[in-house]
Image (cartoon, rainbow, N blue to C red; front, side, top):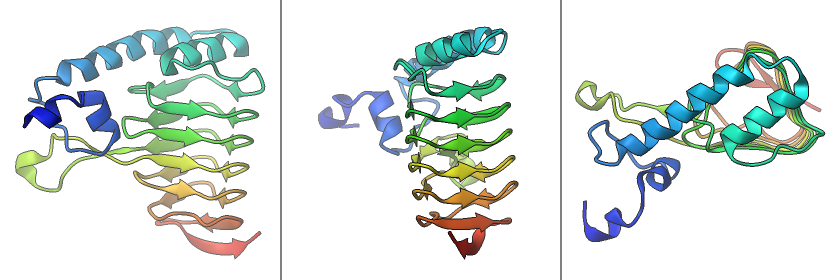
Length: 190
């Protein structure tokens, strides 16, 4: 690591998609965020009303979530710091957001139960497999992600698009289209 690299902290490097190894001298900063998120997630998943869930998730992501947005517990995230949620969003039960690469959910998005948004991956090389590689996920305005769908790292789901229940999305989803299947394929134009 040269002097210029040292000026960029590990969280910025993580978010930018740089390969992060477990032996990185700044890795403790990731663990600190994860530890805080685990503690707050326990409280969130034991909350008894929608306002408390929204307040606790706001604390996890360090940004106030608009009152027009509804999140049902349980809700799972391993990091939380890199999640952005717009207005009039609905997130159903048992969703899992692995957000170290960044997750952006724009306004008016519907997310069904048990949806997985995964921004994290690992190198194929077995000698380096425990390292982290991240790419962001963006869910554009008015998209609908069906129950049990999985969105993989680096994917953008276009405006008004629909991802069918159970789909595994490994390629960007065009605006105003429906995709489904494993791997997800184009079904029709809306």
